[in-house]
Length: 495
Ligand code: UDP
Image (cartoon, rainbow, N blue to C red; front, top):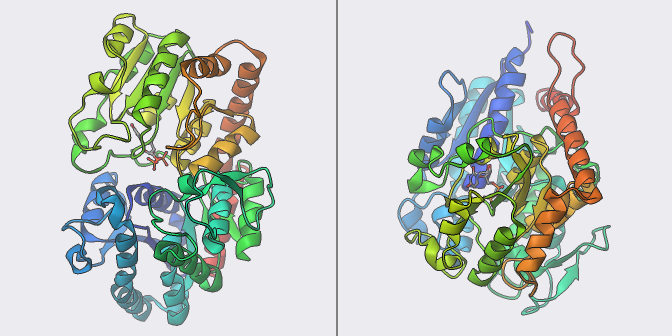
């Protein structure tokens, strides 16, 4: 539009693969939807992350990058520690605290941009864990929005826990209701929810204090919450986060798969291909017949539960693809030794029978979910997996392990496209139930029963809704809810 001032959007993800990728997808979306506004989109990160993001951007993209210097060893972290995937578990708090040291470099960059483009033409879109950027933005007179990479419903639960840390220690086994959370039937095991980041009594834990401070800074100084979800998927979750934060919300998703997710660190490019023959296997199977099993890019389950899962899958007689990662008790980086982690002869038997594929650590998930032969997804319910499965209309067997996954699994049940088979990484899990439980759950979602049919219908409906939300707007087409939310976001950011 002639006369419209060029705006600058500074996207600032937290230093973790699971945050960098959704931000990159957001950048891609902004690039396509906002080109007429002459907006410039820049992603800020540390040097190693910028390098890997550059590799993930398609040729011809106009997304810009800016590096913020970061020296892990200054904070007692191993060299090259620039992303949570390579942070030893006990160093998580140190890593989180260290990210706040990016502040002077961030403020210098914004100051320089303001001098060049004017305050009214700059908007920061930052991660929830970088709450200090909201304070900086206010001080520098520029707009700020938070971009949430989790779902709205799970974010509401996180806000509740971070703002009101539990006051007990050692009660990880007990399920607790959430403070200030309207869904009274929602119960979480704090030990599962908080994972390994909390090492002491949550009430006095420094990591909990950090999270509480970041959320409070955002709620006090930011101008809104941008969420990778849609009104149709999470009406309740969006209402909840609006109420808890007192901020306007913008549901601009689902933003998925625009950029192919890359496996973490070293395995990189080589593993992007379908080395284990998953797609060939799917090609050989009938429509909607195959169960895809994956616990995401970083989580695993205990060895004993892996055995039950394997027996259950085999006994179901249904075809499956299982992305196997070392059980919890093993070092994730060690050599792949499925024979030790699975029942004796399992891999050979299911391969010989044409029943199953054991994929090694990584599989092309989006391609698998989009394949017509895939009929259901046994998932840990990470938010990206949830969006990808909704996008492709695939029903879910939920096996959430930690943090927001627990709430995402509940959301899928509420939407009518999920049924939970297990919950919790260590304490809960299969809760003593054996392989028969897994077998029956697989049958309940892939079989011909009324419940399975209802889930399939619902999944097909949600698929249409998810796609409608982000489409339209070209040549007078009706605009989807997320397209409209993005316009509202840009209108308010560059009023
Ligand atoms: N992913 C994949 N292949 C795998 C495991 C994961 O492509 O074998 C991708 C998946 O498609 C998703 C992301 O990695 O985009 C995982 O994100 P999610 O939020 O589901 O879970 P997380 O790994 O962060 O726990």
